[in-house]
Length: 196
Image 1 (spheres, one colour):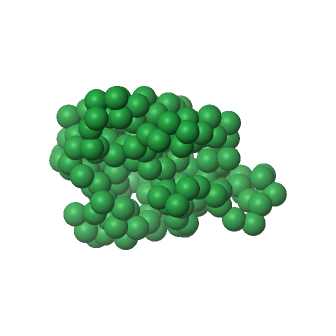
Image 2 (cartoon, rainbow, N blue to C red; image 1 turned 90 degrees about the vertical axis):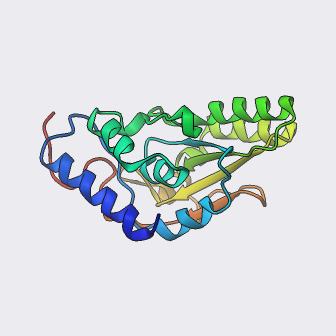
């Protein structure tokens, strides 16, 4: 899957949403295609991916067929996409994917497995309590979980740097990743007001 493929998918979803054919919230990606492709070069087929409510790219890059993903989005599940057959879980609850990642990491460790759990988190949530509890548990128990902090400097429309009085993204462990991106899309929706 290329950057152009990812962008075309989101543009199609934006058009469907703006035409009123998706009767639920959508959260679209933009501006992070190359880094996401690079991350997923390291994600093995047996690995687990735990996403936030913005997870279209993760699903596509983990191998969910575009037609299956689009059908789930059209059915109103954009912010809670789960494809266990592809080992992809997401949560519409802020930080809700993190305890799932911890549980999966513990299960992999107890089974002696070689899988990695990739846990995506936004920059605002990476400062929050649930993240720190999960981060501590993963670190202290040596669980096979890698955190990916997606830093667009916003929580909905709030500047996360101003909220936390910080000059940069949160600090993570050496094997984790923080990347910054800027999206053309609003926090939710596709730029037009749609009444459900």
